View 1 (tube, rainbow, N blue to C red):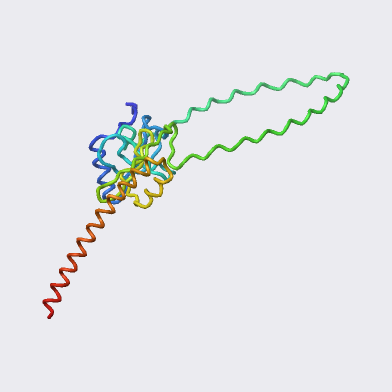
View 2: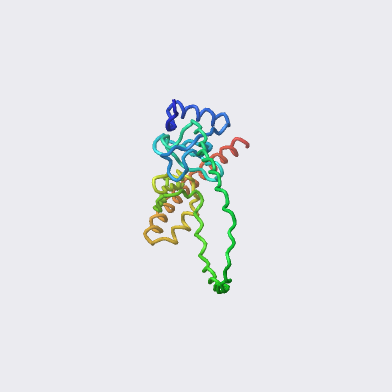
Length: 225
């Protein structure tokens, strides 16, 4: 029976891949025809799983690439595709026998004029280099989201088209402050208000700890007398 299209990842396949990755063995997968920007049948290594398990939560590094890309279970399979069969080469037809030479008496024609040299081709500009991790057909829309906590900690999310390429990555507060000064005043004002509130909370905490330390030191001095 001829083998059809490779099946996408089942829940059992995903559990097996997780187990292999936990054991320190990045498992191999192959891309199906549903994969966006990657040739069907190409192989890759599973590098990580993101949470929650929805959408493109499987991080895969295609063979020959350095970047990890996000894919859904429908774009991957654990079934290695069969090698493509080459089309049979038609046998060459026997060449007809050369006719017997016939002698002709003719007057040599004048030599043809020399062709004019073709103009040198105009050099074309080199195509612009694609950014790392770019995939064929990927939309150009990029959404960068900064999130702050009450303690003044910052994280950043990056949404590239339908793919989330970065999730809750920590960012230094000083870097956020410097970047906000290059953006519209409303952004700088909002970031500065968050940093000021966090600074006041930490200062109050320092004052409280200093008072507790002084009280503990006095108690220690009294016990030492």
